Amino acid sequence: MDLTKLPEDDDDAKARAVRFENEDPFPHVPRALLSSVEIADYARITGMLWPFTEKQLKSASYEVFIGGEVIWWDGNGRRQRKTVKRGTPLVLEANSIVFAQVEPTFRLPNYVAIRFNLRITHVHRGLLLGTGPLVDPGFHGKLLIPLHNLTSTDYPIDTNEALIWVEFTKTTFGYVPPPEDTLAAIRKPELFKGFPRDKRDLEPDKYLRKANAGNPIQSSIPNAIAKSADSARKAEKSAKSIRNISAVAALVAGAGIAFTLYQIGQQFASMVQNSQSLIATVSTDAKGMAEKITTLSADNKALMDKSVELKDANEKLNARVNDLSTQMQKRNSSPPRRQSRRAPQKGG
Image 1: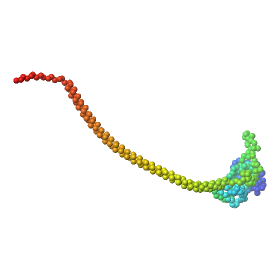
Image 2: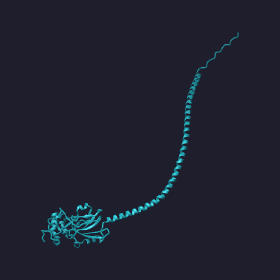
Image 3: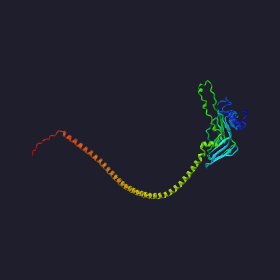
Image 4: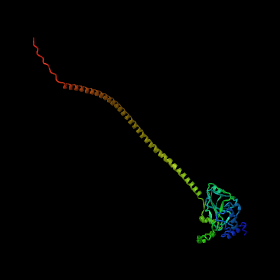
């Protein structure tokens, strides 16, 4: 086992994974997200993924290609399977879910966890990766990734391009606290939960049976579309029946409406005739009243004129009475006059 070189084959990688499962060959590397240098070092020493090539390194992640079994269920619920490697054509049907394995076999030591996600190019094209995206330390096997084509068209995947990127994080497994950390005395290293060995190196069928008890795993979108289309057809059929019924009802209702309108028209004509008669009567009465008002106005004017004359006569009469009263007062206030006696005349 030459640790200065990458593993020669899968058996060599497996042997290194067993040797360094709990032993960290780089204890001074901080417990954090690994950069490309540390990813390469740990891949070389621990065999945590194989095959491994430095060409697929990014600054803090590693690109992974599709490779292995691809499983899906068709529209009739029949299980389909295909083995895919780089360069193999692969098309994801519209609104479908496909489970795909990726190339490398992971054998993670107990101090390294990984996360993965789709390359952003696939996300922008409408592809969704269903993950729970943390893979615990101690996992051994090939990742089985659910891919969901959310678009309404088939999605061809270029298997010559990387499908996902993976990042590696060093955990606190094996951490030894300093002596001055008095609270660390109550730490319980036995609480570390290692990855169950019976869940290592599982075949895709075991993952799927556990997930859905062997039943088809399909997108609900096609069924929803089919139900919508069926509902639309039923609605169209119902609409045609309603239109036919409505046409007959319209004829019957039209006849009834026509008769009702005729009756309303007759009543309206009668009302118009009565209104015209009333208007004529009111007009005649109004004319007579106008004539009477004119006559009363003339009589009122004559009365006013007569009143003025009576007022003038009354004033003259009052003036005459006042004059007579004055004269009588004067007479009553003057002394009576004596009458002179004349001597009788003698006859000659």
